[in-house]
Length: 127
Image 1 (tube, rainbow, N blue to C red):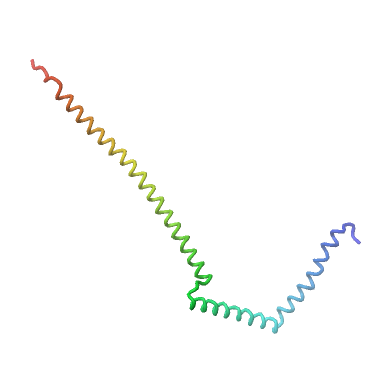
Image 2 (cartoon, rainbow, N blue to C red):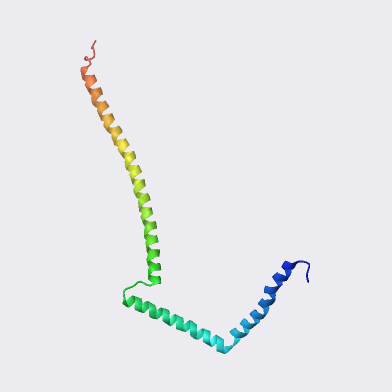
């Protein structure tokens, strides 16, 4: 017996893996088993196609349809976010232009006030 009991417990699964690996290799190498596996995979593929056809006939979306639609929605969402960002930038620029328009109106009022003040002044004296 080894000094460490945990080493014995670790060896048990390793000792069992080798025979299982050999059995699996032999089974996969067998033409009977590999043929059965091939037929099973082909049957599965045919069943998937039949299921998709039946779901299509009933107008029920398949998993591929749902996945395709999800990708499309994500793409549209990203595009919409880009449009929202552009609208925000335009809004900021319009706000800045509005500030300029307010300044223009203020300057116009100041000009009118200056003209009024100039009219009130007496005419310049001539020598």
